[in-house]
Image (cartoon, rainbow, N blue to C red; front, side):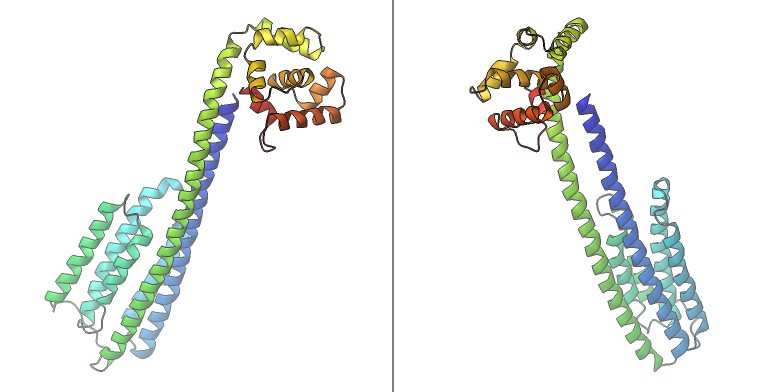
Length: 330
């Protein structure tokens, strides 16, 4: 049952790794949304201050607080992962149409079209190219169609800004260019941080896979040992344990009958092991701890520890490996 315990431990560790990644990624998204909140809030203040356009300023402020709402709901529970993905896609589509509207609202002279590229740059941060390829293509298609339509059609029936004059377009275009560059740089920084999280997850996954591989190997060895044990009756097991616990003179002889290959295999590792050391190896094969070996052999715990240390050295067993576990697998 030892290997089952280790597999449970590895699975628990794997879940912890996934939880840590998800938690760090959610925190990263929250920082991204918080930065968007401040950028949009600043932008809406600039609009109302320089141009007096209350409509645009109010609209941008609403979007600003919408980012705070997303921070509140993002990553609350795994049950809503698919729903949140749908929400993210919907937000990209909504923002695309908002950009199209403001592009037309400002007579297509204020550089609002640069924000289409900002949206495209943000896609890799929120979506995974492998898992969400269809969603990414859909968003890219929507953005492309909006961009083309806004370039070739005027949409005179839609309202236009009454607050922007001819000279204002140079200023607001400059603001939009700077805003777009800032958004692009922000996307690059956060995508880089996301990549670092993914690299860390890959490294931890490789370590977990390596550990599982080792456990599978150990499991195979333990199963072979278990098959040997299964040939013993319950009465045989009680007998050998009783002989060991009472320090019976016939214990070692009986042990070699029940485990005929153990001593030869130990001697293959080091033929210089003396009788008392082989006796101790037999007790450790039965998974007796230091205290129990001391009781069974009428030795002090310090003497047993010293003997186990010499055995470890002779068998070339690393101090990081449990000597009992090593001998159980022999």
